Structures are given as C-alpha cells and as structure tokens.
Length: 211
Ligand code: NHR
Ligand code: GAR
Image (cartoon, rainbow, N blue to C red; front, top):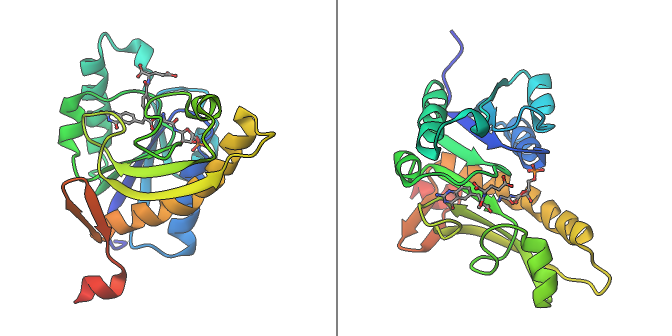
C-alpha cells in the first residue's frame, strides 16, 4: 500500500492555469499531499484536459442540471467528500457557494480572487479596476467565508496598471502573480501554518511552526 498523504480537491470553471500552478508546485516541491480530484461546473473547461493528462480524477458537475443552488452544493459536497480532502481549492471556480457549503469546509476552503480585496469584490475585476483608474491592482488569496470575497486574507500581490493596459493585458499581469502566491498559500494551509485571528492571518514558516 502506498503511504496515504492528505488530499486536495480543486474546483475550476475554465482554463485552470492556477490548477496547473498548484499541481506543478506540489510535484516539484514534493509536498506531502496530492491533488486527488478536479471538479468543474463546465464540461468544456480546458483545465480538465491538463488534469486528465496528469492522471488526476476529473469530474463535471453542471450547475444547469441542478434544480437549485442548495441541490447543486449538496451534490458538489458529496463528490468532494468522496475524496476526503484536507483542503478544497477554488481555482477560477465561477459559482457562488451557499453558506451551508462554505460552513462545511470552513477553515480548509481557499480562493484566489483577481483584485486587491477589499477593492473589487465580485466579477469583472479588471474592467472595474481600469474604470476606477487605480494605479495598482493585483490578486488576493483568502479563506472562503459565506460573505463573498470577504474572508481572511492569506496573501496578496500587487501589479502596476499601465497607461496602455486593456482588460486582457492587465488580467495576464495579475494571473502571473496568482501563480506565484496561490501555490504557496495552499501549501501553508495544508501544512497547518496559517494562524487566523479575526480577519488577520499569520503565515508561519516551517521553522516557526516547529517551535
Ligand atoms: N462563495 C462564497 N460563499 N464565498 C466566497 O468568497 C466565494 C464563493 C464562491 C466563489 C470565488 C469568487 C471570486 O473569486 C468565490 C468566492 C463567482 C461569483 C459569481 O457571482 C462571485 C465571486 C466568485 C465567483 N458567480 C455567478 C453566480 O451566479 C456566475 C457567474 C458566471 O457564471 O460567470 O454564481 O470572484
Ligand atoms: C483567475 O484570474 C482567478 O483569479 C479568477 O479567474 C481566473 C481563473 O484562471 N477567478 C475569478 O474570477 C473567480 N470569480 P485559471 O482558470 O487560469 O486559473
């Protein structure tokens, strides 16, 4: 029997570049964990192809087949729980989750959001940042609570907004930062190195944790 390491389940809706960054970091840095499954709400999510190539179990759960959000989340939880994950990662997952779902995974459910929260919670963050004329934009990794995009902040990275930026060029600059901060945050969560006090999160390094 191979040794059992903690499992990660990743939820996606699209490209899955954050999924790739996490899967690659897990392998290259030899985390004591494995990505056990990827679940997408869209059958055509390109991220599913990458996961399948890596031999990761893939599932599609289309929200359009569910009679209600509660039904969808109950089925989603059933699929997730089959893998008994230590951590559930939202990586470009585009569906709001019910409080019931969030509470079930509270403390082990993490998201990356493409803005410097609390600015630009919700959708279309890059367009809204350009409209608002901010000079700095970025990405936030946060623990998920039932208030959308308002959970305790684990990590942030800022990028400049350039004069000739479009939504696409700005999104690409932000995404590059997501790929740096998200795997490290997921690893810290897995390794029990987050200390949450209210809205503030201290991220211990491995040395501090040992003390
Ligand atoms: N659920 C809860 N309860 N709390 C959070 O913080 C969540 C969450 C679900 C997803 C990711 C989030 C983001 O990073 C996330 C955080 C989708 C929507 C949304 O409005 C909002 C925030 C996020 C993800 N989705 C629409 C919906 O009706 C659908 C949009 C679409 O399909 O394009 O679910 O920004
Ligand atoms: C990322 O920029 C992520 O922050 C954002 O979608 C992109 C997914 O890219 N998430 C949201 O907007 C959540 N509402 P990816 O599929 O290549 O990881």
